[in-house]
Image 1 (cartoon, rainbow, N blue to C red):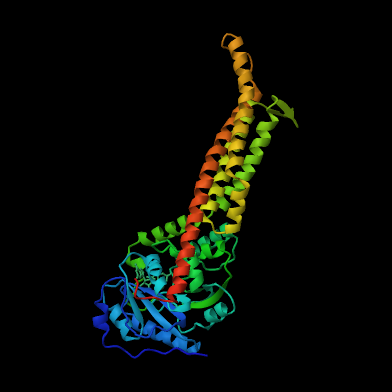
Image 2 (spheres, rainbow, N blue to C red; image 1 turned 90 degrees about the vertical axis):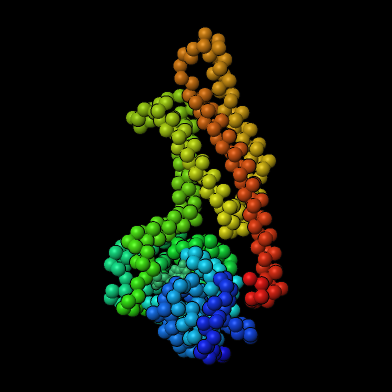
Length: 434
Ligand SMILES: Nc1nc2c(ncn2[C@@H]2O[C@H](COP(=O)(O)OP(=O)(O)OP(=O)(O)O)[C@@H](O)[C@H]2O)c(=O)[nH]1
Ligand SMILES: [Mg+2]
């Protein structure tokens, strides 16, 4: 089995670091691929980055695996010089957030597997075997878990450890039907193919939630590996603290936003279907007029409640289906949906619903005209007809949007296919083209 070869220390670090942004600074002529890329963003970590890179080499050697250490750097201090001197490849990127740093680095990976984390000596990169074994065992995405591993006293603020982290992990599991124990853990392993499929978009801290939820949505094989989490070294402060007291709250809010944005099934699909069914039942039962059942009198107010429930429920259900086609996580599901709810069927259903709703209202109109522009009693069937008209128009709008989004998804699939074909032609890593 190949083992890692740590490059000789470089004195050329200074010169390398002066190269322009978004450029790979290390200049090894041989660009051979390796099994593992340790991929770590760095922002002003001169206190820890040198020892961190040493830890990585130690971890790779202990795991007897070929690897590289790729530092994605946006520092203003000496971090890149130190990292390069310890044998890391340094990719210099503009400071645009943690998520963005990962996105920038993906095309530069040499390994088929990436192990991600922080270069602050809080995650123990001397212990990589668990991650490597899990990926070799067929997992696409491996989450580290601090709660099932070990947390040095003082390594995590109590508010984060006992409130924020468990609560958001619980919420995540509830929404996405998973059983992760520590969704915020920054140490994770992922195959390069999975990382590309995930198509990260989050620029900031919320990348962590996006990555894990997309792994779930794309039905990737995932597992957890316990990790050790150490306290920050004296003098080193996490960026969440460096940003001021509001930063962790903003990071938490962004994390929740991402979790919610990708969860239309949870928030809209099921509640929408239930509301629609209840609403139709109530409004439909009252279409013939008021009645009493089990001692309860049902009248126009109940019918209006049913109409509201049916309208809101139908809208929610439609939004969820639109989101499904827009995200296109499960191609077969999206295709089936588009093939079932075709444009012609949608337009026909809209026309039928509007026509069915118009008939009792036409009858009402005749009554009104023939009674000196007065209505003698409430026409429950006409009120039900109004609901059908609303549902008809909703169906029409939904059909148009569904097929617009379907066309967009097909276009994106084509672009992705072309990109991956170009990638295959160019080989695993073509650094000459930025
Ligand atoms: N390139 C780049 N690196 C960043 C940026 N923000 C943070 N980092 C690096 O990303 C890693 C994570 O940041 P930390 O400050 O360790 O975050 P943390 O508060 O410790 O978060 P936890 O480790 O989850 O507790 C560190 O290695 C940082 O140096 C950024 O904008 N650009
Ligand atoms: Mg950290």
